[in-house]
Amino acid sequence: MNTPYKYEEIKEHFNNYLDENLNYLKDNVPHWKEDLHHYAFNEDYYIIGTYKAKQWLGDNAFDVIAIIKDYEEQHFGECSTDLSCPESVVNMYAYIVGEEIVNGWLDENANN
Image: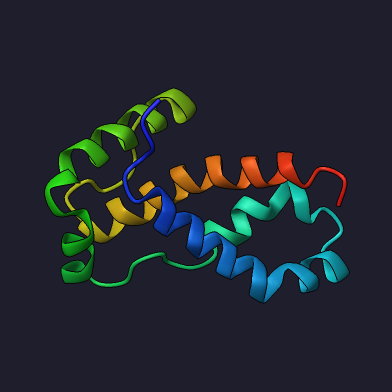
């Protein structure tokens, strides 16, 4: 299986999130493991700004859009992300890849 586009960058974002927030979550959020993906990838934007989002997508915009469409149709029955907005596209893609990253981290840290 191919590594998703910008996987390592998104993983680094998650690791930075953990460095800054893990102790707080463990101490203050009763079901933090169940909500970790939400906290790390849904409470704040991964990329802010249209120009920055376009640069981030580069030549992979249509591949990323296809991933979003497939994911949303599979999970929600329809695609609701505004695919004409580069910022929305990048942030939803980071959310999707982030789900895989968080699940992998949770599997590796099941006893913590």
